[in-house]
Amino acid sequence: MLPVIVLVGRPNVGKSTLFNRLTRSRDALVADFPGLTRDRQYGIGRVGPGPYVVVDTGGISGGDGVEMLTERQVQHAIDEADHLLFLVDAREGSSSIDLEIAEQLRRTGKPLTLVANKVDHVDWETAAGEFHLLGVGDPHPIAATQGRGVKALLDQVFARLPSTAGAAEAETDEDETDEDETTGAATKIAVVGRPNAGKSTLINRLLGEERVVVFDSPGTTRDSISIPFSLGERHYQLIDTAGMRRRARITEAIEKFSVVKTLQAIEACNVAILVLDAHTGIGDQDATLAAHLVDSGRALVVAVNKWDGLDPTERRQIKEAVARRLPFLDFAEVEFISALHGSGVGLLLETADRAFENATRTLPTPMLTRLLEDAVQEHPPPLVRGRRIKLRYAHQGGRNPPIIVIHGNQTGDLPESYRRYLINRFRKALHLFGTPMRLELKSGE
Ligand code: GDP
Ligand code: GDP
Image 1: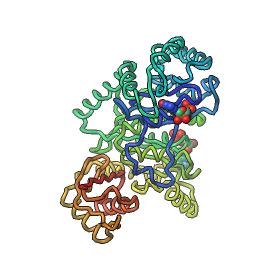
Image 2 (image 1 turned 90 degrees about the vertical axis):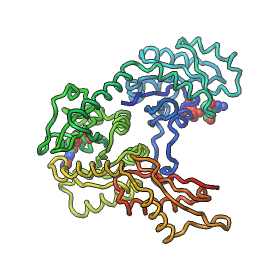
Image 3 (image 1 turned 60 degrees about the vertical axis):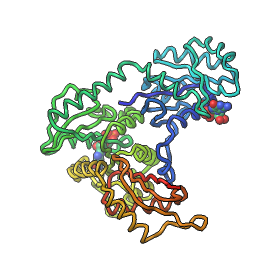
Image 4 (image 1 turned 135 degrees about the horizontal axis):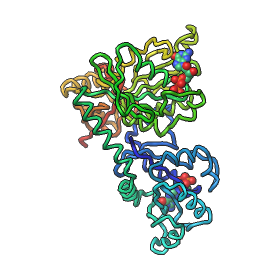
């Protein structure tokens, strides 16, 4: 599971600036989708020896200064942290609030790095001294706006990550090897969705259904992160997002829901199943989670759950709501299921397998180039400054998710709408459903 790095500090020290720098999106393309709202509090960090989960407590908290540390959600984030980054402002120097925060953070016993931000415009040699008085170690200088010192900071954090985080990773790798030897490659499935969508009902259904065999493995106890099972010849590992099995009360669903664990599970899986609740409709939380899924590049199946007991009008409404509120998931196949009664659940795994197969497919260069030629012939790219953008040939640049590289001239000027046209053409012609796709444009000029 990915390590969790949590940003703490009083307002205006630069937490959200650092957060944005660490989580800068790999793919500007998806940012252009209307309705895709990124979560500004939780993200996947890729600067330095990533990936890792980054949490900005300033984004979560409404409060100022020290009292924000007592807020439940902030407390929860700190609990989940493998490492805390305590930000202070190098220009303003340390304040009494910083001292109080330092004191409280020390009490958590969590590994901590003191980060002095905004070292541009200051004489750091002189400024550094007073931060030692906070009693939380040497300050690490950065300028978040320019990215100065940020990579070095992350290198240092990774070198200090608690051995449990490193060990957990090593263990997982070992498990995988064992798994591969004894049962063949298992498809890793993450079941994600907001509280009460029906994730645990679905998981129990998947594990208890038909010829499913739950392996008796030391990993399958209470804090399990991965539950291996088989259906016929196919092998799977279910990545549990929050110890969601064996839960007594409904309210626990909300308490146990963890964005951090959800992001970790998405990152660890081959295919994500996004569970939506047909009874409550599509909410902001669903849209945010969907945005994370698109960013992750993972293969995806959408499961609209609680399909039982809906009349035809309600069914039509929820279908429309999925298309309208989650238009950027149009690449995914949608299954309508009842986790409670089992209808549609059998199909889910088949659809998930297909999605992952598509994500990892090999796409021959001649085929891609021919599809590109057809697309261009039918609908040529626009003129830019009197010259037509030329798209010459295409080849595959990567898998999982599939990347199609297109070579031509002036491709930097290709409008977003044309990129989307090409992606849709490729997707339909190649039947590449269930996986995000990326287009990379290379220009000879
Ligand atoms: P937060 O409240 O801790 O999330 O702080 P913000 O990230 O919103 O930053 C507060 C202000 O400090 C903004 O105006 C930023 O542009 C500015 N800032 C952040 N990092 C730096 C930096 O490295 N250098 C300078 N000069 N300003 C910075
Ligand atoms: P989780 O928080 O996402 O794990 O959700 P749960 O699996 O705990 O389900 C939340 C509630 O929805 C429980 O009361 C379930 O019985 C109910 N539920 C789950 N799946 C279905 C379904 O397919 N149909 C109906 N009607 N209720 C369901």
